[in-house]
Image (cartoon, rainbow, N blue to C red; front, top):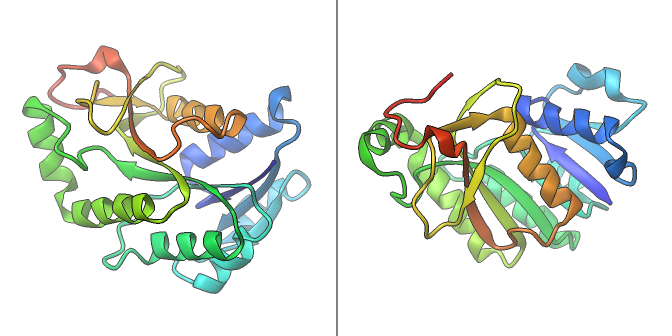
Length: 214
């Protein structure tokens, strides 16, 4: 499998990369890493193809997407006109790349209840419409997409999460970055998982908390 990670220097992206390089079940995954400043991952040049990619530049994105089987976009599209999402979709359609995983935020559908839901809505409101638009663009794209509605994140060294679909109440308020990386890698192993779905991910033990736990 040819896997492209865009925004490849992000914390979750780096966890995904580390596991792909070090776990035998990913030995047939060929990585291309796209990021704005490619020198930041120069130490990985022997293990992956490293490209300088500005996600707002359609030509950069198109060149990176060519020849891939699956694309993971590790950044939430907060651009006012959703240029990042549009560039990714256009490049994937042009090069007939079917499968995309796209980071997003919780609260796209008012699916987060209680005091935490109110607090979260207040915090994400400045970029909420762009996040909603990104999810809708993917839904309308005809691609096999998965939107990841990420919780508030921590750096705990644990993998513990539950997954909710777009029409279920969000379960939990936060999770480890390790857990999010694990969800992405489950899809890498089995790309038919969560096709055309927007999934919420969080540690169920944090359900009912009013604020994130770090």
